[in-house]
Length: 362
Figure 1 (tube, rainbow, N blue to C red):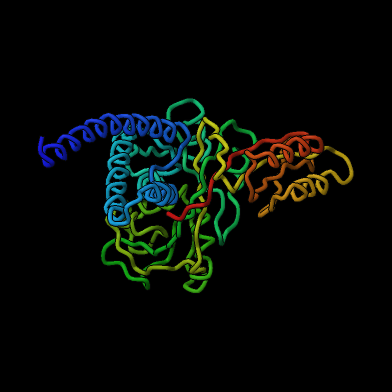
Figure 2 (cartoon, rainbow, N blue to C red):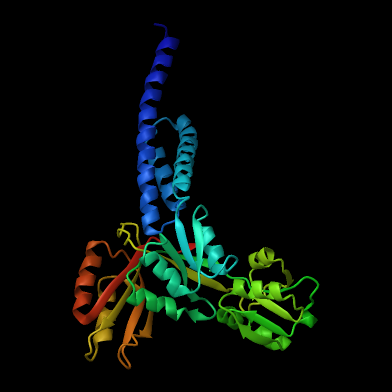
């Protein structure tokens, strides 16, 4: 056997092994896809991809081969994600509103392959996941200008779902009118209360009357159907395109830093991974002097940074509150377990809503 024949035989043998290993890798990708579906996680995880490439490239001893191996890994990862995208095509994602609403836009950004289903309100979207109609729900929890979305926080506390990811989306409000309408024609603006609040200065400056709608997309649809040049909606560019409206003026929200944080809710609690550096918990404290202070101290004593602490009335007793807390640190580790054990002593209720690696911009 010549050297060429030996080399070709080696290639054949390696290719046979690689085919078997490729199948094993794609089988594992199927399992990853199912896990992501159950836990409401998006497919793209660029930080994880970079870790895989850096770690595996270090195993290549010949420096001349490393750049080729990087390309080989990138292509393999792409194929893995293509399979996952196909497997998640049947995934159903709930959101509050109709097509064109900001929640719909964000849901499609996070889960581009899923079937996104609109519901009448936050409770209906949440319950669609509880009763199994949908795999997960994308719901807003906070706006940088208008504050917390209390209804969703209440659902988090009283409901059974978990949050396995937080996503920040920039919100751009626009003045939307029927074709041919000008700003001087507008007398009334219609939109969701959050959008009206975000654009309050603009509305006041122009002397517009306001009218609330269930959400921004419903407002856009109403304006399109009525065909009244004196009435405009405040909403997204996507809503304008969908309902055949024109953007009379863009970026009318008061703050240029306007963004909304969305949480993905699912029935399954994602495993607390070693890479999870953020967490959300909900708790009530015992009715005793210093209980809240003690709870906050316990979190800090075990090395966890409390980023946010918010209170909401439980509505079960007068002046009774629960607390929503966001923190930094890995609660799945030993320190996290000790902290939770100690925290449970001064809390009458304690729920870990979820943990995740980081908040993602979409």
